[in-house]
Image (cartoon, rainbow, N blue to C red; front, side, top):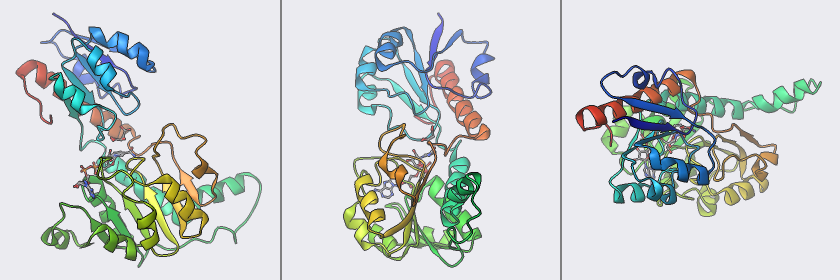
Length: 314
Ligand code: NAD
Ligand code: MLT
């Protein structure tokens, strides 16, 4: 019997090549991006596998309507767009691709830190608008500044590595970071409070969980150095956006670079109107390499599940 696979977000065609060339299993691959939640709820009934990126919200409603669903594949890291409790209750396996976009996300974060420090987007726009304004865009160096990294997993560590290449000092907070590990990685470590008190740039790299939602809030902003710069290329919601807005307007925060926000797409978000903010539309993992890699990883998991009954990364 055919195994029906629905791909509901746009994925790399090269990345799903392992599925396309599978011969032992009878795979029926349907690509249908841009479905509304109601359309997906109807369509999902016929499918054994749902393959998504971050745009499709796999809610309880959709999972409950999914009579044949056995596996949800997430071509990326964050699984906060999938109702894991609802999937577990129905015995549906959820697999993600935790490593495939680490490098791209770390490079994007580094690019955002540099663009923020040197006003690159605004200087470019000003030049495009016909101005030769050199005084307005005086930046700051990264050398000898302190980067605070909150969430020291795959991406946080890669960002730290690159920051050290830019001669920054790095201090990190992660509940799983020990003194030995920090020493081995050549970074200082402390509590969130310790980190934000000394950092000139603060970048967050945690998942979005109950514990991390708004972990960077009004109280935490009040502990930061004046003129601090804040970067979020992880998940909207880790930083309380109202507190960030106020901290920028009050002059506490000199600038912020955001790839993600609480509500996406975030066209029209008032933070975008502040000249101190630069932003990209959730592009951290948007490289040819990362998109191929995450789709390949999840494709292999699908094949492994239906061929031998196990997955690498449930
Ligand atoms: P990871 O699991 O390797 O690292 C996350 C780290 O956060 C872990 O070390 C964990 O211990 C730590 N953590 C958990 N709870 C914490 C807390 N309360 N306080 C501090 N640290 C805590 O994940 P990763 O691959 O490094 O991804 C990090 C984030 O980046 C995720 O939110 C992921 O979804 C996001 N991401 C975004 C993009 C993008 O396109 N912008 C791309 C890839 C990943
Ligand atoms: C992720 O969690 O992997 C990122 O949000 C990238 C994405 O899939 O868009």
